[in-house]
Image (cartoon, rainbow, N blue to C red; front, side):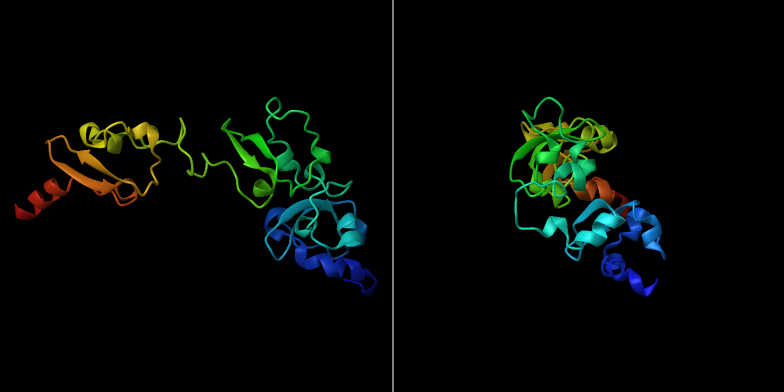
Length: 209
């Protein structure tokens, strides 16, 4: 990189090679209008042209101000998040007037159609769809849908009102199970899914034979 490219040298470490899939350009001044993904030391990432990044240099997301500006707004820095704002459930929202650090609670939707509410600042910090990340149970990520063979051994009598479609496979909740031989036992949901643990009584019986 040439000596007169000092501003570009200062921002080279912020170039997110993982998202951009290419190393920082050897001659960035020739590609200054290229839109890239940037990442600061705190893990914030955003989109911006090389020219604009060289001019400002600081991480927009680390700013303490919650006021949106021409180059500091959700639409400009995180168009991916702006696109996930629900089109009808957020009244009078203008994405280029919305600060990435706003504490406003908005309604979002992901590419799979899941809907949820979250603060803008929380989304900017990297929190995604709670259903896709199995932090929230939904119609497509529950135990009954994803692991019907495990759900078939659910002990409805023991678990009361709790049903397999109300828990995620990664849950650490300990619940009751009942095998096709009528044996009952308790086990953590995730251990049944990830470790393949089955009926403890049937397992002990095989060991004696």
